[in-house]
Image (tube, rainbow, N blue to C red; front, top):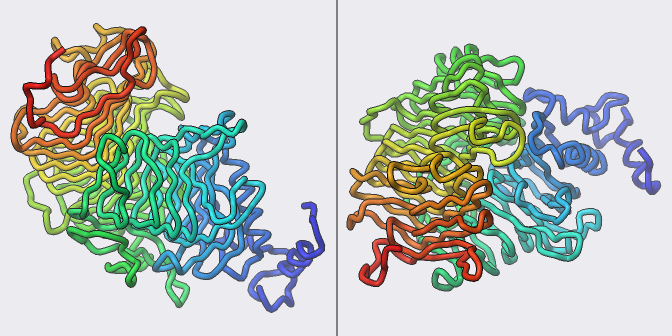
Length: 612
């Protein structure tokens, strides 16, 4: 290490001294970053304390960033955890990195400096592929820092899907994009903010879509195509489609995501927030988030290359919860959850992969299960389903104790070829999803129409299922297939498959293509807010007759819909928005229509809409 000034050298010497009063527990030759890495959570989890050297904390974080900045489909995973207190550090967050405070509330951990996500690894500063990272449960006061090109008072978090922001207190402005090398605004395609406070304004700039839930800010600057606010304070004003805002006053049902914290005695716990209904605003702003604490002794701490599916199932059978530490888990069997109120929590964005064409996770028809913070990767042998919540024909009423799914990525292809028919199938009633991305890979390894096939991203057979932030893309048939009543979706983002070779390969009976969002004919009640369906028919001049198919029933309602022609063959198009309602998006010269919108379905005066 080269020391830029004498004060840095002094900090380093102090941190190594056995007589140092600041760090008395560190042995000779052991620096703070080494101590931070010696935890019960394994080698890829670092736990920092305020008394540790800021220089060494920054060095550890920046070394991980340098390693992971371009690790788009890498296998390493990291968690950087901060005990309560104040830190004067600045660093950036890369792929497969989880940054979290270990306080009961976000303000218990205060970072004075910066925690940022940039897009400098992309030659144009685009954040379109800035996936798979998590920031939660801390406060940050952003300051000027030249290496990361931030400005004093600005936190820059340039992200797209699968990069949730939760329980944050940004004491300044929050920008959700990055700048390109020529001063251009880089594109971004996110995202998700929940249970957070931004003292300044939020500047999404190029963000194509975004969901904010139970959060607040001093101002919100703009919208592009589809921005949804549920249960938020100080929401922006305007009428869809210009600006593209959808505001839902209250969140009908939520249990905030469980999180790891450390108490005053230095003991680890998992806090499980309480179930709440019809909420507005931030859970911790007027006092601690309500809920219960579970001691870590009630958890089996799973570790890659050590924890088999058999071992995990044995621990579940004994009543243990599971905490997955960072890494990739190759599973020879399905993980089976049979007890109510079981919690499976990922630390450091871990991945679970089936070896033998089996489902990764199956949940019995029980209530109160919570699954959070995991990547579920399809394996080389085709799995029928990757995550099944409840067996088929589940009938039990779980309204008093719903199952929750948080921050899940279901991925087919990308790191390697994978195959499955369905990503997530929900058979139980009263399941709630909170930020889910189900992705058939359009880039990376193992990608192609016959190489990483999937039929559907999501199939819902249970009644009263609610999802906040459903991102569902590139599957070869319906992206979303909803077969049960009383479903609700708040913010939907979907791209149809890029790689359809020709029209005859993509027909639903006599209908051209498959709708992205299909509500089955038997369904009589369903509602969705802020629905965006996009197309990029790259490989063939194909057409999709409708972005959404749904029964024309008074109980079926869609609010604020948009279709987008992103790119592709000139002859390609999405012909209608819902059924035969709405005009097409296409780019066939000399005419083109890159975006179409529909405020309500069913429309009030259907006579004005003509089938094309």
